[in-house]
Length: 293
Image (cartoon, rainbow, N blue to C red; front, side, top):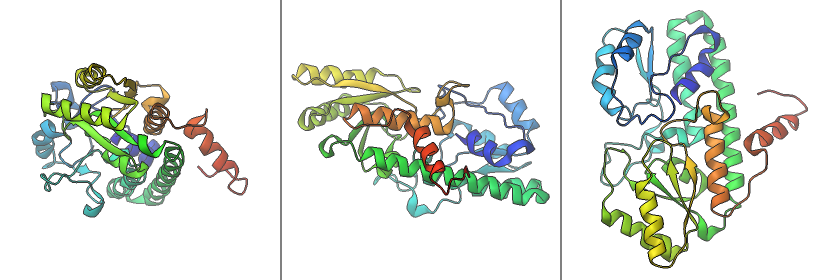
């Protein structure tokens, strides 16, 4: 997700290398010897920040003594970040789940790239504006389709607590079996609490994630079945990593589009056949007949 925004802003002025690819859990990731070589060769390093790259933190701090290491979430106003009541010093790092908030990081990237290439400031500003405009359009689309989910079914249960920002933007209650980091373990009490919720609220679907083992989610399905309630796995969501490289889901836009479509349909709502791409094309066509994005 970081590479997506950096690539969009930098354009052809930089070669962007991603250390953590599809299916990789950033909470648990540790730098390899090859990663260290790539970091050493880089002119500038970008990271999410907000303690997401937990096990990489020491390595990134060390490189920060010799070259720019940019936390792209650093300029997001504190009051826009989600925090748990018992961990006020550790905001939720999964900011990319809110397309408006995430796309605002393009400005931070543009400033950092301008310090490397002062003569290209206009290009970076234009690219950042384009990225933010697409983020706003995605946010508009997400709110539109989420309204089709019946009010009593707007509860999203996933493997870990990575979807708070998406839930806030869609007006959907979100419950993760594990906490903000996958380093935490889900206990029997956590699972039983969510089984109670699933049965009480007659929730039709729960969701697995591409970077987290599915056993806890399956335990909820089995627990609900034992109490006479059928709940299905509504699909696999992309949380801490995008989809396979070279696919639509392997882009930031495609990742969010997939998640929104999967959640909305599984919880009883409806989505246009073409998803966000159809919505975007129609919006562009209707904007004075001009394609600006």
